[in-house]
Image (cartoon, rainbow, N blue to C red):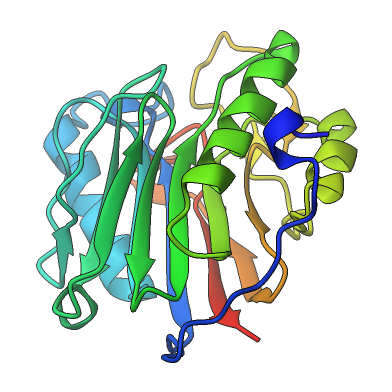
Length: 248
């Protein structure tokens, strides 16, 4: 079980209004630190500019960011929902395309781990940064249970840096959450030498989970490196993940 409060599978309760398919991108930005593989002259403003270029190119409806250092990179096509809470490391922020933001989605913070943004009272998207570490299973499952219980709508997408491990998936499925692993690792420090002295492993920390009646498709991991002045490097130790979410 996810927790005693979520022993039953989630049920689907539709609002009279359907929300259109929404594209999303989620990315842990590693406090906007500079990769050890980047050129020596690379600065935080260069990371912000490169991030903006990626956002304009991918052009998602909703951008979910984790591990921000108290500032939010600017993208002129999007506005930030009115929440910028801290997680266990850095801040969370959710950016929404201006035309979608004009529909006045509601916002709810789950302290320390999530921002829930609800569109047309039909679909809630939770931007999450869950507890880290192999020993953090209990904390992560408790956080997920709290997010499910707090969601203003039964149709819920949870996306972001979940830090989940394989042995936690059965509890999530029992609670009614489904989520296929990304097509490629969203953490691959064998290829992404962001921290030169760090351990080398692959993982699927950044991923999604959804309630019944919510479909996620067109999932991609954006793991291409930048090439600047003969240096190949990544903007973060995590890769961004994109997809499309719809109520079915």
